[in-house]
Length: 372
Image (cartoon, rainbow, N blue to C red; front, top):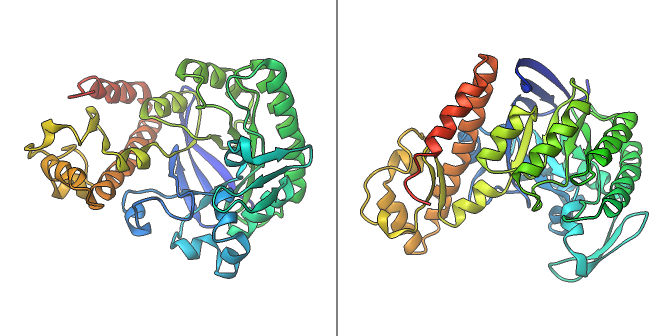
């Protein structure tokens, strides 16, 4: 049986369901911690599991450069190498390659680029990206696409999207069907509704196990992002999972779930944890602020993570001021726990028919923030 998604409840456009993969079932809506190079930064696999996370993300670009896709395959695949027993989604590498403007050359067939690590030359095509993701052992493989930069003119966005659609057809051809594995197409078109509609039509004509919305959270702002989702999501098949790539803040996630998104990933919780920013039920706290130096309260009294259960804000403040690596580890754990708890709350609310009530309660808590 191929990878598939089964709905279990709706509240308005918000959806709850189950994604069934080769490495287990994942309740949706789901947030996937980012494990770009085979690790969620500052976390062990056991720690990630302890937060309730069921699925993580890996990255083709970084893993093909180091340690190499063929080596990962020889070592038993990314699941074994990283001690991750659940499903893994792999980003195709398109976003990273496209961000290397000074180090890459693109043509109709693919992209030639220099490694940011040692300057060595590499080639990525739709076929090679799919092959690398198979070698890694990805449960969900993403199509290789061009992430359209923002801002872009309509003509630029159209040319970029149409190239990605040609590449999507080649990815579908290259993908080897296996039980519990699937390929997701990526909708592009910047913030232009007609281009998004054209992209959806092209992808659904090819047929994929799931559909991602790409090219957002790149500077267009929340209002434009939500408007793009409003125009795009009703066009997608209702029986397939929908993944909003690289998003985002808790407020972004609530707004996207409200519109029918099932899957998310973002570096925000881990990156924020490493820099001393903690997401809580009362907004975002900067643990480096002097006001926490003698504060014996937990970061968030309602959180069950080790940072909140065993330590005070004063201790966490001290760790960051002293440059101790335990500080970023504890705050990263806390932030991932916060995101997982948020998704669980939203899922339960959808199933119970009270999504808007729960969203309002969460947002009211943020309005009581103690600091900026």
